[in-house]
Length: 325
Image 1 (cartoon, rainbow, N blue to C red):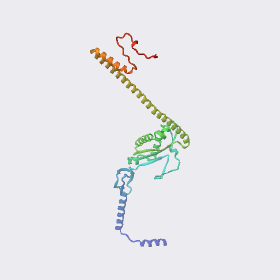
Image 2 (image 1 turned 180 degrees about the vertical axis):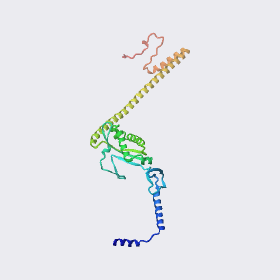
Image 3 (image 1 turned 90 degrees about the vertical axis):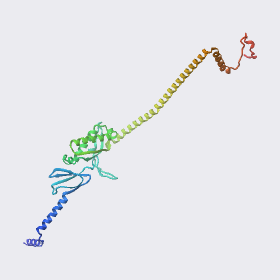
Image 4 (image 1 turned 60 degrees about the horizontal axis):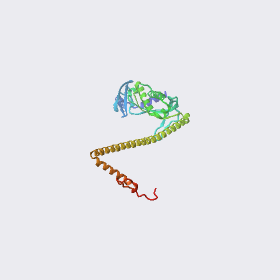
C-alpha cells in the first residue's frame, strides 16, 4: 500500500497537458521524422536504388531527392564510379608509401598447374566497376564471392593452357588480357552488372621449394641466349663485310670490263678512221705512219746507223771499235 500511495503522489506532481498541445507535439515529431527519413542526398559518384515494400521502383541520380518515409521506401546507395578490387594470393593490410601485406599463406589461391605440368605461384588483382546497379543488387547473391570464384576458375583455365615460361616471363600481359575477356563474358552471361576494369598479374614466381632449380634453368637459358646473341653479332659483322668486299670486287671487275671495252672500241674506231684516211691518200698516210713509228722507236735506240740505199755492203761503212765484240 505504501508503494501505491507513493506512485499516486508522484503522478499528482506531473503537470496536466492539454490535448491541443499533445497534437502539436505529435505533428512536430511527424514532420521531423518525414524530413529526416524522407529526404536524402546522392553523392556524385553514386546512384540511389529505391525499393517500395521490397520491389524495385527506380534509380535516382546524384542530388537531393524524396522518398516515402516510415520504412515504406528503402534506399540503397551504389557507388557506380568507384573501382573495386579483389586480391588473389596475397592481401593488402595497409596501402600507402609503405604498403603492408598480410603474412598469411594464400597458396591455395596462388598455386596453379601450367600447361607443361609445372607449378607457378601466381598473385593477381581484379579491378572492376558496377555498370548496372539493379543487376548488381538483385540478380546475384553474394556478388563478391561470385566474382572471386569466377576469376579463380578462369585464371586457372588460362594458365593451364600456357607453359611455365609464358606464365612467369613471356606472356603475362596476354594472359591477363585473356582472363579479363573471358571473365567479362561469364559475368555478362550471369547479368551481374559488373564491368571488369583491369587484371594485373602482380608477382608470378615458381614455388619456393623449386626456386633454386628454376634459377639454374634460367641461368642456363640466359647463357644460351648470350651465346646465340654473340654468334649473331659476329655473323652481322662478318657477313656485311664479306658482302661489301664481294660487291667491291664485282664493281671493280665491271669497271675494268667497261674500261677495256671502251678502249677496244676506241682503238677500233681510231683504226677505222685511219683506214678511211689511208684510202683517201695512201702515199701521204703511209709516209705519216712511217714517220710516227720512227718517232716512237728512235728515242729508244742507243746508236743510230744511216745506210745509203745504193751501198752494196754495210761492213765497210761501219767504224767498229777495236777489241769490240
